[in-house]
Length: 397
Image (cartoon, rainbow, N blue to C red):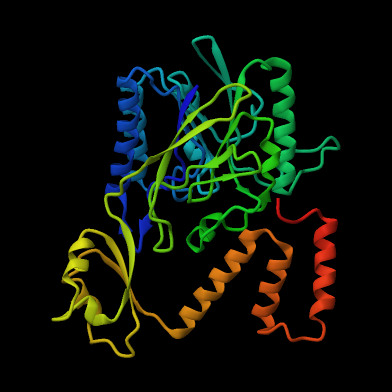
């Protein structure tokens, strides 16, 4: 089976008080174009996976609702056989997103916002192959109850319960079918940028190994492309647009081919932004005045721009002056020495954590807190830390 995956659209979002409707429409046109291109080659997509955060807030603006409605109508009209899977993320209102879901199911648009039928898959068939697609919306404490009728509260426990139940049903009724799960969560050791933290909020981490029984898991929640778990078949497409000046520039949809019992084939499909989101740094004179870098100005004339300057003093009305060269200037600020030090510390911290090496992580943490390893208790504390890491089977894999 062949799927197109994209998530975290956040329709209705504003960026530095700027309406992103045109940028989001430009992206949706690319989804349509990708579906049309593959259909014309004779190798059409069987399904479109959209695992959550369709809207940016529980009560989306009317324009965002119309945008989604028009897009889904266009897809059904031109690709009537395409199975579309939509589930609610932590930013969506389940009640609003699920409006008319029973009617939409009849035209292959499957919207899941509750867990009532979470073990009932949608079955896709093609050329003798069959695939069961399961959907789990963002789970909150109390979404499931244990055998003693106690509410399950921790997200890892909720997904452990759900995956176990789905696996039991799949093994019993659909064992010869390939399996796909769509869900919205944050996996353990995922890479989360500063800009994504406001979207992730206080969500707990979930062990990616819980999803090993599935041939593929399409995940939403994080805004950068990444594969999670040892088997690397739990995959985030990331958001289609950069929603912060800290975000990575590259954005993707995913072309996913699923085969029963085989490693999924995942291909990144680049998304072209209507406006790039860029951060420029340097002295004020590089961006305005007789010494301005005209090549740089020309390159970013259509981009959404943040400018950081390191000048001690800037001209009065600096923003207005800069907008004569950068019409989409959205943010301007002076970068302090403290900012530079903090970013350097954060970079070191991220590098240490990414190493997954307890020794490296401890050394980075200790020196960041105390400024030096020249402490009489350093070795003693380190020994306790490393022993605890060993007991919990934590280390490089």
